[in-house]
Length: 147
Image 1 (spheres, rainbow, N blue to C red):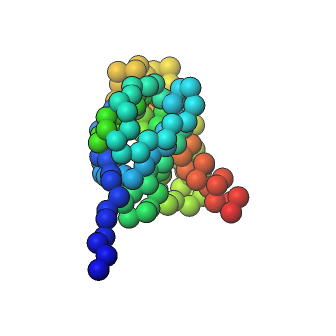
Image 2: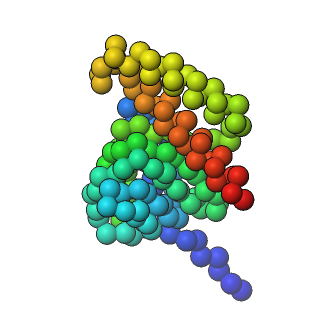
């Protein structure tokens, strides 16, 4: 008789100006820290580090990989909790090239009006989210083409 032992997990929360982007348990995550990519597993030593633009990879208990593109922010690690406070963050979703092209078009249109926006405007936050979404989608498509 063998007992099934579950792998330890940690809670991962990613939030941005737009609200909660991701919340769930994870076996591990990889994040783009300012001084290089960091890998985090349950019971990791406490840590606080700034993030640069890039992809956060979350391995779930179901062995699926969740991808979230972040544009700067802070990563806080506790032994059973990882919190990312991102400037902007967008979950990568399965979209096609037409959707990526439309996101690029909308972002270019918004960029033409950038001089009218301030950092405190909701429109500015939405613009940053649009840019982050476009970048995440472009990265996903680039990786898919490599396979």
